[in-house]
Length: 159
Length: 291
Image (cartoon, rainbow over all chains, first blue to last red; front, side, top):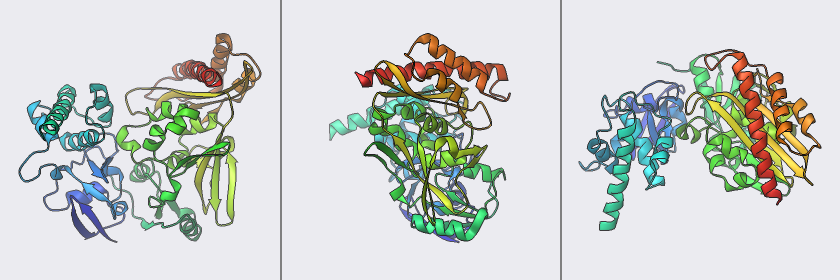
């Protein structure tokens, strides 16, 4: 079947089998291998992308279901060479070691800050409860999200 | 790589169209909504539908409304919307209790109430929730609608009253005065299936339990309706002793199997404790509402 999906603002059109999962559709698109394919069982959260602004697990959605929807991947965060504040936060607070979970963590926590610009540590932990990191122990990830929240609040005040 | 076996895909543009497709394609067709139960089962070849009918565009099935003496929930309403609904939290707070601990927030963005009920997994929380509040399932087919009580909806493990050529379109919950409800769950880690969970709803009139609904998740082949415990409670004044007795009945009337989540005696004990806790909290909420 033919599908045409908006990925990071660009229409990606391809012939696919109906059974193709969104994560593979994305990763088979040139330059879009940032979305990681992890557990394949909707447990680990490495494959999280945003669908119409909401974080979703792309290993448990068919690509065919996404036609007509806006998909955003980790590649969309950096704009004109400038990192998104959530990426800056992960860098500043050393919120990754191996980095495998990071794309999903970034898209999950970006969506959190879009909905709740000033989350508590507990709210951050709940938001990432569907994302597994085996390196950091989560503490630095929580710090990174707080860093980004404070950075964005300060930037807003300057305007 | 885990990928489902091949199937034909079509996107429904109306409820009537989805039902017509189900009729035409027969038992090899399945409806897909959130897909967070069906796709994992298809990856493992536990489900092998030849046709998938995607109903995600049928936004007319996504709503939570108060209509007369009922609250109606469309089958495509997602977990995140059930969690955030102030209407549900006010009338049936057990929904928010349960939704806070169903899977994780990202999964809750996709999964639906219709999918959860139709999956009919005994470990799933919303089936117990809907049983406790005595919800009714609205099932639509080509020849019209029929309404089935939750007690008759689950006919076996992974089996429901929804027949070939039919789909669940709505869940209706009767609104009655003096009601309170609660859902209690114990899980191994955030987002996991329950080791055991208990749903309770009580309706208190003039200081007595006028009616009660009790159901358990994850401790039997299907959702367990605790009708013996309900009979014990009906018509009596609330008391700790009474709730403890109901918990003992729950322990006796469940039939869990031993697995990685625990041995049988632990799960039976837990089912009793959670039943007592859910009843206590439901009754407290009912009294606040009554006052």
